[in-house]
Image (spheres, rainbow, N blue to C red):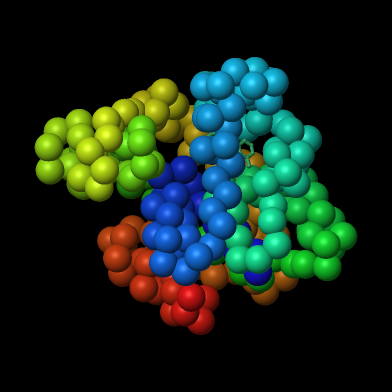
Length: 211
Ligand code: AMP
């Protein structure tokens, strides 16, 4: 069963995907995480993607489709941060129809530009377990240290105010049409992503008929 998570950067897709993956046994494919790892390890994909990721732009569709094709496995899967263009959405449909599969639900994390820019600008991530914090709204108990595993917290290179605004614009232009695409095929589930993480998690689970 494939569930795709759509929404602006900073809307909580990653946090919800992690919670659902842990509780319900989904495989969590985060294209942003895969790309950041590729950049860090300087793999061929990392080298091709670097300038786009660091400038808050979208990585070309061909690279992204190859990356998804390689990451997909049978079973329960959440794809977080993909598709981000209509071409990617069509490419995914084609890929899945060859495997006799289909997108079961597209979950849209609906939230205002103002809120996501604030969320992105203060976001901190654990370099060890990937837990997500916010300097103001969800600080860790000890500054700079993860509550879950004691790992060090870091700020993503693209989580500054200037790039947050640019990434939101890219989302509006390139990704919002994907929301309409899934609406037409009646697979869309819209969530109010300004709610707190726990309420959102419960709502999401209910909408997916539990685990
Ligand atoms: P994220 O962690 O989802 O905010 O992604 C970080 C960055 O990775 C984005 O700003 C893009 O540069 C790149 N990226 C992630 N997913 C995609 C995608 N589906 N298509 C194109 N670029 C992507």
